[in-house]
Length: 140
Image (tube, rainbow, N blue to C red; front, side):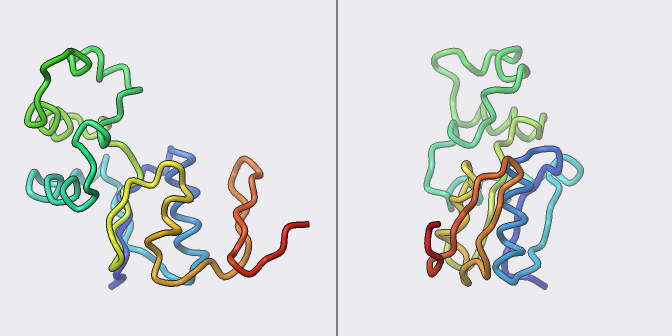
C-alpha cells in the first residue's frame, strides 16, 4: 500500500497533472476518486485540519452549486460548508494529496512538489505544455 494518497477527479486537468507528477517521482499513490467514494465527515475534517487552511479554501466556489446553495452568503459557517461538501462532493476542491511530509490542496499542481518524499525523476510536461523542471535540470 502506498504512503501517498490523492483525492482525485479524473475529469480535472489539475488533478490529472498532480497524479502524473506523483507517479513521475517513482511512487504509485492510492487514488481515491472522491466523487465515487466520498470521504466521511471524520476524514474530511481531518483533511481540512491537516492542510492548515480554512474550510472555505477547500470548497470549490467555482461550481454553480456553490452559489445555488447560498454558500457565498456572508455568515455561512464552517459547519455548513462541511455539510455541503459531504452532501455534494463536487464541492470538494481538488486534488488533495496526503504524504508523509504533509497534506496539501495542490492547486496549482506544482504544490505537490513540496510534499513529495522523492523528487521528480525527470522534467515533467503538464497537459497544457508547461514544463516543470527537476531540481537538477538546466533551463534551455
